[in-house]
Image (tube, rainbow, N blue to C red; front, side):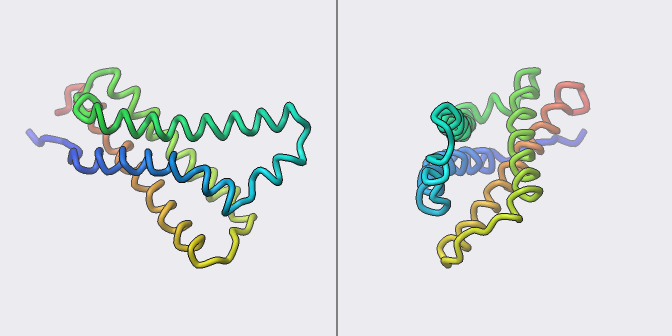
Length: 148
C-alpha cells in the first residue's frame, strides 16, 4: 500500500511563514497601503470594524502558524479533527488567494522595488500555505476514510 505523507519540514515552513505574515501585516497596512489614512475617512464604528477584521486576519495567521509549529504531528494523523483543521486552514488560504486575484488587481501597489518584490514573495507564501494545507487535508481524508 502507498503511504501518503506530507513532509514535516513543509508543515514547519508553513507555520513559520504564517507567523511571518502575521508579524509583517502591520507594516504592509501602514507603509505599503497607508491603510489608516483610508480608515480615517470612515465613520467611527466602521473604523473599529475595519480594524477588528484586520486583527482577526493577523490573529488567524499567527494562530495557524503556532498550531503548525507545535502540532505538526497532530495535523497529519488522519483524525476527524486533523481533517477539519487542515481543511479550514486550506480553505482560508485558498480563499485568500481567490480574493486577492479576483479583487486586488484593480488596485495599484506602490511602484517601489521593495514592494514589488514583497508582493511576489508574499503571493508565493500564500500559494505555499494553500498547497501544503490542501495536501495535508487530502492526506488526512485518505487516512480517515481508510484509503491509506
